[in-house]
Length: 477
Image (tube, rainbow, N blue to C red; front, top):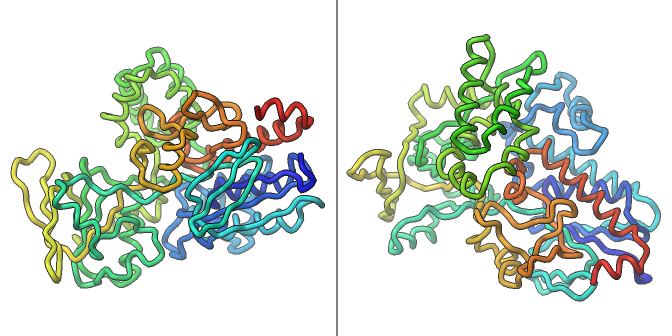
């Protein structure tokens, strides 16, 4: 270790990046230590999910389960109650308030860090990482260079991919009437309130954007299109903790294939219904065992699951808050929100509108829909093999990162969270935590799972950096 000490750079300041910085500031793995948190926007401790200022954008997990730190499971609940004593453990509160909580944790951790532990926040877009023998250098889009002994990628929520249409039609994606990223701060400013809108996707992002548009005074009809037309499902309000079937995962593991998993799950739902139970508790019983169930599937069975079952699993597993479910049903009941199962075939842009050509599911003929804007609500770009994001593309091109065979994420060492490079070697300086872990464990998007990954990564960094200098040098080589 040089006289300046050790530097850990964390790229991405959403939940994972912030939670990791807080843990390392509270318990530094080595001193002196500098922690640099790099984010492409100025909103530290927010990320895509918690940067919203809309009060009707609420968490999809109850407040009592949204604590960040190990041993402080109800940390967020206590924070939220200081702002509103009426908030209970089962409340679904605003994502803005959760962002305030993350920001407070980060600020307090930086202020109270031990002597010799420094924190620096950097606003910038990292476009490339270059190894230098004992760490790496971050190349930012503005020309700046930052050196670090350890680099942690804490990213993964990129703008949605454009829908596949014939090449001549793809020019529409450069139009101001098309919104690729609905979470961009100024994304909806050009959407005229008196013109109908088409939302591509019918999941939780669609629901957020519907509520956002209505809050902005949008009065025209809203159309939502997805291939299967699956609708968001809501949590129910609970007074008592749910009761789970502990034997269900074991029964599923008896034959690890997609068809048997589906059959066992359906049988469990039917049994629960006969006993007055709820299907949500059946899904909940699989939350902890999901990684083991995923690991047990062969590559062929994982592809079958992805092709046939993934959309159904996600709509049942990732549900919205009860109050949002009520708002959604009210929109549908009023006739102002129209759901279509089908796919887009093309676009015909006119001076005052865009005509979308679509084909409904099971239909032979196409039909046309006149709207003022098209908003992509299909969710973050998930295929790491094709993503055009500069940093991810550079990591692939330089052989520092390798997508998994399904494109769900990156190849990552299960213990150290190190990226596996093009030679099949775990990097001694480059690690990852975030939603791309779904390639390994399938479930890696909600706070209860991600905070466990963050804690394991923090422990791995402590174990690595606390080694004597000579031992660490041999490890790096």
